[in-house]
Image 1 (cartoon, rainbow, N blue to C red):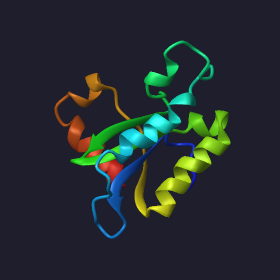
Image 2 (image 1 turned 180 degrees about the vertical axis):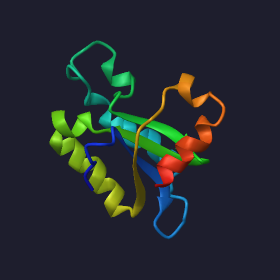
Image 3 (image 1 turned 135 degrees about the vertical axis):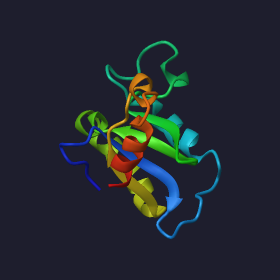
Image 4 (image 1 turned 60 degrees about the horizontal axis):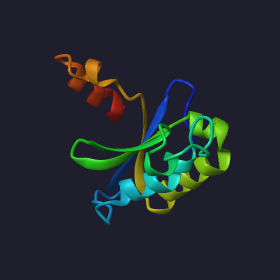
Length: 121
């Protein structure tokens, strides 16, 4: 799976292609934790290991656990990108190309329905 130039992020959704919820329930936090070292400027900063990378963040989408992977990860760490995309493929997880909206935009009326429409496209 590769992101198209029009999308900034890829959402790995914790729902398998056949509709089952992926387990364990903390899979998104575990995956993002493994990827925490891959970040702009590298991992060599105090406390960097205890924060998620801005390129790989756990979240929830429509009630399902997800990991939002920024395509900048692919540009800076191709092997890390391949690992994350391989994880999604090996576990038959849904992968959605989209752009994550800032909270201020997402709170605008009708923005939620627009985001859902974009994410299901």
